[in-house]
Image (cartoon, rainbow, N blue to C red):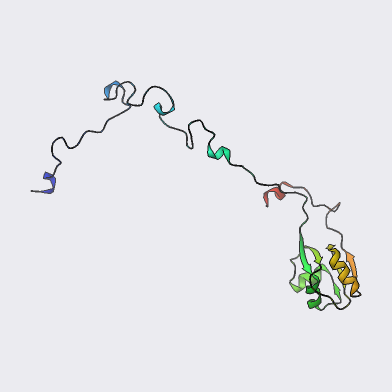
Length: 162
């Protein structure tokens, strides 16, 4: 006996039903698909759920809201000014010390202690930070924001960069 002689016994296999071949095929008119309706035709749309609102339409598209006028500050604590050791602190000295990135807006926050007078220039101060600096004998100076009317420009990019 050789491999090409092997075959299933008579009656063990049936020919595949050839549906959708018109009157020439075994299915004849409707080809085993019933009459009319979506499933009687060629394809179903991807994600079709039988008329129920599909999952891709049910889920929310955009989450939240991106404020185009948001002003984002880089926080620096009073304790970091104490460790810095400078008598006059400006945004540029903080950039040179590696505490903030260039062109960043700086806000001084009140965490930590300051026990020597320091002249601090920044874009914003918390009330606690302002009180701590003035209590140590220092002074506070607000640097104006680099925008025309104190607000960043509203651009479409602000919405995209979330």
